[in-house]
Image (cartoon, rainbow, N blue to C red):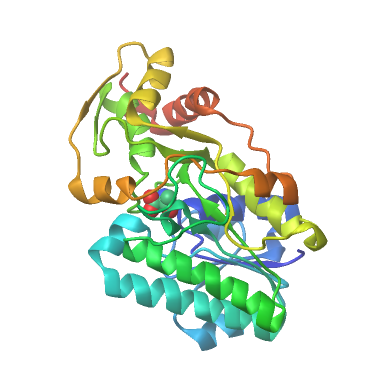
Length: 322
Ligand code: AKB
């Protein structure tokens, strides 16, 4: 991996991955793209190469990759679970159309390829605890349908055309730099903002609902480590189960209370997002990722909470009233 093109670079993962790869590879070796124009003065624009790209536009997609002589493609542009449930047709068109174009560009230009799947690729008939790497996948959401289809398509491009496809099933990702846009696990990000702004949070995910989560620095390391992994060790290529912690709302509340003892939480459950969460696993078995490319996250819940609150307090400035 020497020169990388990234789609969806203004999203929660993309914005931090661009920063990391610009440091690792040099700013001139990272081609950041998104369908939206970044805000004026944003580091994505001022500190490196940015291009507007709608990933459903194959010709432009290929031209940017070709003109810039990239050797690696990280395809992140996709709708998240809650938005995909609200706009299922658009979710199918974007998540599948974008991925198909990305894989075709990778095939034609012989690129190393990464795209994320998600815990959303599982469904209610999947074993919920210690969910195996290879198991039943019958998701009941449009997001999940696109994620399973995407996993299969990546496997197919590897087997049929020899494309060096790689990927992980991300759990909920927690970060302080860029907000996630329309996911089910977003409550675990919102809670830190509200803790600092209001000292209180109304959780849209109900008591007792466990989901896998990970802090963004571990997620970025996972992408880079898997892209750099020795291919001869990879028995699975795409959709590795990864996770650093599994908790329910009461546990993240308790973790915040260790730093902010007066923090309080109530529930105002959103039936749509609760339904999605109920169809997902409680906790994943990540042993294949450990065995095949040494996956080893550094942050547990309490370590993440301390870092999140410290960094967010600085970011929020006067808005942090607690
Ligand atoms: C979402 O909640 O949609 C995402 C995911 C787990 O894929 N964070």
